[in-house]
Image (cartoon, rainbow over all chains, first blue to last red; front, side, top):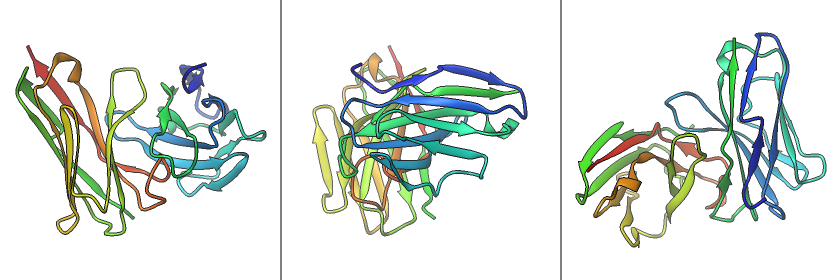
Length: 114
Length: 115
C-alpha cells in the first residue's frame, strides 16, 4: 500500500486479556516507531526498530508491553493482561532511515479495555 | 526528561486571519523541532520542522520560529482556510536530529477556523 497500515482499527478487550496490534510500514522503510496516544494528549514514544533490531524500548510502560519486528518489515505490539489504563490509540510510524526527517504515521489502533 | 508545554489548547480564528501556536521545552539538548497536524481519525502528519541551527523556516502559508536561548518555538499559519482546522502538535527530540525517533510531544492545540 501507499502508506502505513495498522490493524485492527478498533479493538475492545476485557481486562486481563492479551492483545496484538499489527503495523505494516511503507515498503522499504528501515525505521519503525510505536507511540501511545491517550485521549486528548499528544503521542508518547514507546519503542523504535531499525530493521529487525529493537534499538530503543525505553518508552514501554511495563513488562506487559512487548514489540517485535522479526523480518524487518511488519511489526506487532503485544500487550499482556490488559488494564484500563492501557486504553489509548496506538500509532505506528515508519521512515526511510533513523535520521530521515519525514516519518509517516498510520491511522492508529484504538484500544478500549473494559 | 524533556517537558514540552504547548499553548493555547484551543484556538479559534476567522478564516483569512493568522494563527500562532507556541511551545516551550526544558531540555537544552533538544535539536529537532517538528510540527504535526492531526485530523480526526487519522495519524499525525508532519507539516514543517526546524533544526537547532536555524532560527526560522517558511513553507508557503506556514512558518516556524525557534528561540534556543529562551527554549521556545512557534508555528505561524497565515491566511487560514477551513481545511486548516485540526489538532496541531509540537514536538522535540534530542536524538539524531530527525524522524520520529524519541519525540516528546506537546498536548496539542485544537485549531478552529470560523468561516
